[in-house]
Length: 274
Image (cartoon, rainbow, N blue to C red; front, side, top):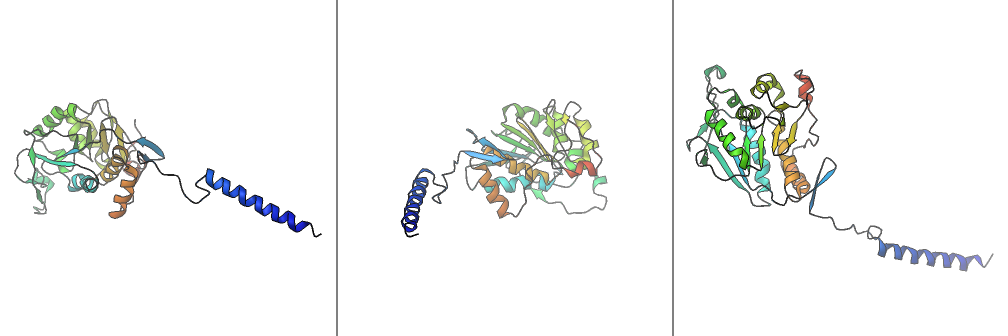
């Protein structure tokens, strides 16, 4: 039985040589992961090449009675992006006077509340600053009988935009300009039956938390705009997935990454479409 000892020793030596050779060929075996490429951003399990010309100049439309989160939800996300790359913000109004969130119609403020803050535009529609993205919010604004200047501005600026983003019932405002005709889009499901007739040629999508159709992006109700903003960042900016993970963690938001995750369509009885 004595010869067995040298055989075990030779076997151990052989295994040591083999493991050493494997570690040289495969850095994962050696405990070091291969370097990760920073030129990709991944969402929903798909990887997208970083945008060669990411949007830098973001305009937010401020019609009277706009919903606050429709603007400041996406703005919160994009402001965080601006700490990692150069972005410019444009707050657009009819004039430079403060814009109130109070509805135009007294019937939408039946208790004569004064709970309506004001916000200061940085530019007017007439200034027509060069922007890459226009964000159109909704809220009571979408039901205003006086949207002429907003509709005309959307119509004028749309051809030069990289992207048009509508939040909630902002899709109803944009639809009235005609720029959504032929595009897939969605809106707040609680306001579906009011908003969709504003764009009879729009391919309204249900269920959908947000919809991406080329240069047109649209979200469902209010907070869905935050998830749209995160997906926009994931796709359009370098290191998008890492940005989303970092920003969502810092604001403690659980990002919904599936655009079809929309329980509100069923809740409000909106049938599937487009």
